[in-house]
Image 1 (cartoon, rainbow, N blue to C red):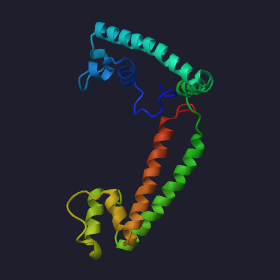
Image 2: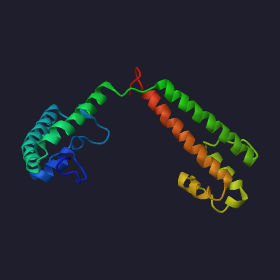
Image 3: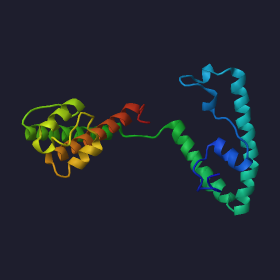
Image 4: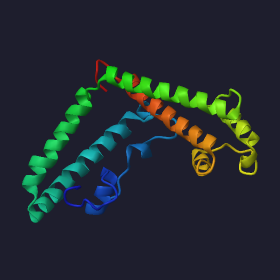
Amino acid sequence: AYDCHGEWPFFNLQYVTKRLLGKQIESYSDLMDDGSSFLDVPFREMVNHGCQDADMTFRLYRVLLAQLEERDITRQFLNETMGLLHRLATLEFDGIAVDVGGIEEIRQRFVEQATRLRAEICKMVGKPFDCESEQELSEMLREVPSLRGYIGPRKVTLSKLEQLAITEPVVRLIVEFKRVRRKVARLESVSGAARGGKI
């Protein structure tokens, strides 16, 4: 479907079936209530749903194969698209190799950068405070004379901080600190998901 209709907004089975066959089918999420899982769905319903998906896939195969042939891109589909799909499936099954040690080195550099930024921020405001605490950050910003009218009782968002950073050096450092801490969290998420050097 993507090779033939790359401009479509969706390529899930429900959308493609409706678009090419004119049939409305249920998704797995339609079978379940909020907070339920596949184990909560009666077995017969799951079987019927699985059969419906297999039936629609088989019907779509014929339509889409004809469209590939009509566009003269069957070879492209079989050699390139299916080759990429095979590669993706292998990566999903086997995992993607990651250098956990290298990730840790990068993470450590960002942690050191965040520590330096935190110290510089505390020095600028004249007292220590937790840069990651929304409450302490708001209280500290309210004490900056040029920001008193800009900081209200609500949570101070990153986009608000970015606007204030244009004119306020301390806020510029806080924004940089938050960005670095976000990078640290992302790296920790990757290394935390790694098993046997793969993710």
